[in-house]
Length: 86
Image 1 (tube, one colour):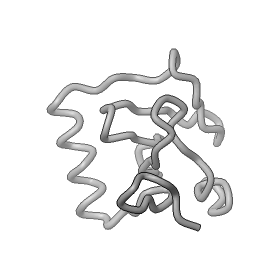
Image 2 (tube, rainbow, N blue to C red):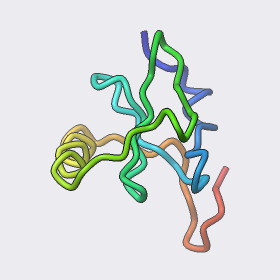
Image 3 (cartoon, rainbow, N blue to C red):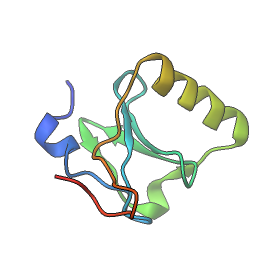
Image 4 (tube, one colour):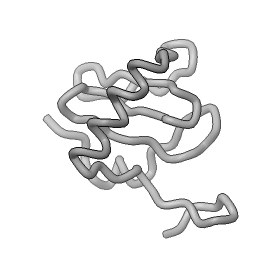
């Protein structure tokens, strides 16, 4: 089961409050700025910083290759000044 589009529009990283990438096939949300992944367990995003996983450079490159090749968009857009756009 996929995460609901309405949920994805409001999901942000709990640490830097920025957008995330939803990699459905990997069952995770990814913050490339902090190289941190948040797992999705039983269709529920686990958005607790202590439960997240810091990824190394190789895993970051792999995840970003998936994002780029699949044209995955971030959960929300951020303007040039860092505030979210509706």
